[in-house]
Image (cartoon, rainbow, N blue to C red):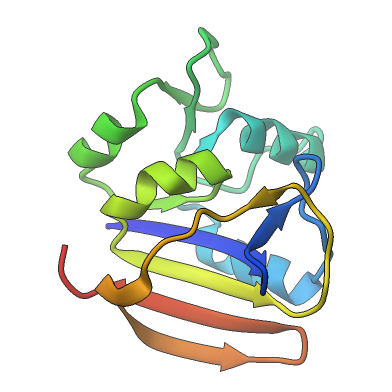
Length: 157
């Protein structure tokens, strides 16, 4: 199963200077609860931004795949050069955790979407790619003062 998980503002903003433009502790805890120990796929920029956030600690995932076109060997991750082929051939539960390009490539293969809608106005430079939710159905919605958590499941692939 391919899961996409992300937080975005109500204007679809997801980043600023390769960082999250807000700090909402409850959403960070939600993200950690859903992805801790899981197999994840992320882009190279997301990988380096998380490595900076976690400093000398290991990333909190199980197996890590990093999508890159560069010839890099990661100590704690497996390099993926062809994201589309990787997703088509994927046989394991997988969380796609960013960034925008990886989300765009993964959307056609997604089985489930975990969306955190962050309330408020923020500035940034990176937006989640626009897509049509019509092939997904809402299966869970939980609203707090700062975040609306939405989980969608694909109706038909």
